[in-house]
Length: 244
Image (tube, rainbow, N blue to C red):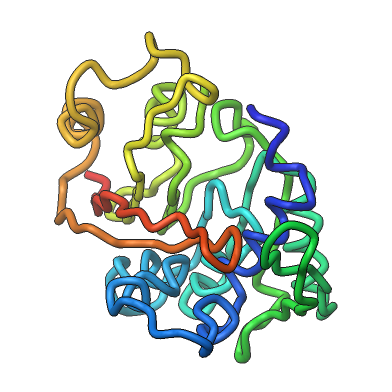
C-alpha cells in the first residue's frame, strides 16, 4: 500500500473531505457549478444506501479519517473502522475522543488557511472503534457484521480479489454490503494483472453472486479539494448487496 496516505498533505485533504463545511470546500468568493455542490458529503451519502432501521454491528473498511463510520454509528450499536493509514486512524481516534484537529487548507504554493475538524453533532463516540489494518489481511477473529461499507477502497488495493473473497464471511446472512469505487485502476496501487479483466461492475457481479444478491447500483459523485483551483471531481460506482 502507498505511503502517500501517511503524508500531512493527504491527511489535511481528507479531513476537509470528510469533515469540512460546504463553505470551507467551495468558498463563497466565486460561483461554483451545481454539480460540484452535489458532490459534497460523499462519506455521508454512501452510508445512506443501507436500508432504514437499526443494526447491531457495522464495519467501515478503508474508513480514512472516519466520517462514514460516524454516520453508520447513528443506526448501528457498534461500528468498527479500519484503515491502512496510521495517520488517518490516529486522526479518527483523536476526533472520536472529542479533540479538535487543526489542519491547513492549501490555497496555492505556500499559502494556506488554518481550519479545524471536529466530530459531527449527535455522534456517540462509545459506539465507535478505529484500528489500523490491512483490508486484504483482516484479523481472523474480526467476526461478522450486519452492515459492511467500503468506499473508494477496491481500486487502491494491490490484490482486491483477496478482500472480495473475505466478504462472504464478514457479512451476516441477511446483512448488507455497500461498495463504492471510482474504478480508477492505477499501476501505482494495483498491478495490472490484478485489475478486472473486463468492467468493474461485471467483475463484482461474477465474484459476489454466489454469496450475495445485488439490490441496486447507483452513481455517487465526490469532490476532494486539493487547492483553491484544483479539485478531484469524480463519480463512484455504488453497488448494494444482501448476503444470502
